[in-house]
Image 1: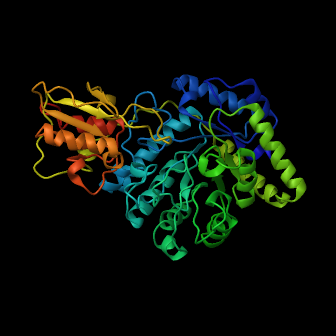
Image 2: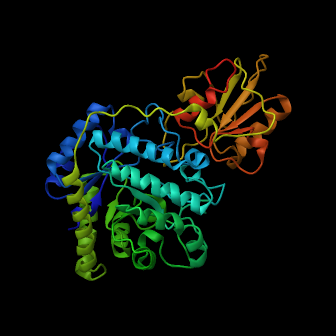
Image 3: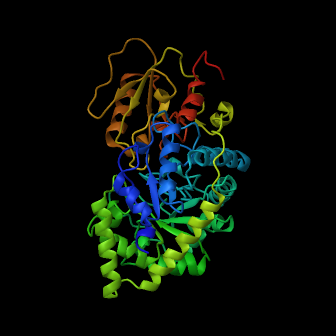
Length: 468
């Protein structure tokens, strides 16, 4: 039972012998990351090997259709991302992106997609959600969440609305810390929970928990460990009967002070059914997790009935996915409409076209862990850029117009300072923010609300002389 609830990651592009052995012995799932993917052909061989070892194994991935992409980590995503889709507010367009993602994943042999992101980006300083969110309005986020879920699952891939009960009103990243959302339940019902209710109504097969502390609901345990939140609120009040998946247990918000094995015990006890362990896991790690969970059951810390309930839920999902698994031909790449994508941009009044001969600088900040290191911005669109990092000076003025491109420029002291200096020393400099901009437009003459390749191509179309 314990093995059937574990979903590790692994290193490399081939199925390791230790992981194959565990799959044959009943390991329930595997999570793929960018480092596991070299090509569509290699990925298909890998997923086939996993399913050969265990036909009921659930293969999962994070493919959000925008900045967070594992399939397109080498080139940048061909999809615009949630924030752009929310600003366009065309449910058919959102559904078409989800359908295209489903077709790619189905062709690759993937069963479960950790998407859509159903968080409301309530805090513009949020370091981990931002453009992964459809927006700030609960009803808008809800209808696009439902459209994404319906289209993805119609394409034969299970959805996972995340990060319950809402990671949008945080100024901390649960990969690095334990965020706190100090809101009462009525406020959550009016805002954060609305998209999850829509996802449940749309039939989402799974919901992913978040490693955030909500002291007015449970002052002792983050959501992933909280029976009050997962069993009381999600199952009891909202009526969700599918599989609850934990966010990765290697994140600081879950295991930073107690370790992954203890976090696994608490996650199962709290109500999680399928445990995402993290990346680059090992045979020894999984053995330790199994041993600690088994000891918790024997000591009474973890009820065997909870373990059995989780096992039954995961088994039912695995059987459903295996029965419907069908690999078709490789899908054609979704082609975005550049004009429609540009309609989502927020362009300050009076801003001229980007000069064709502009010198383009990109402000390189630390990559969001959820996004990872992927091509972004105009560089992903094949445009020559100059990368700038903390401590770099403005380049010598060579007479060409200057364009500075960044992501979430307002959130980083050094990027704010760099733009401030450029505004003084280079009158006419154009500032482009390809993240979620702050309220001060000093740091964003153009805000694109996404940095994926297709968004960058739409931005590049604004340059003088470029095809529109």
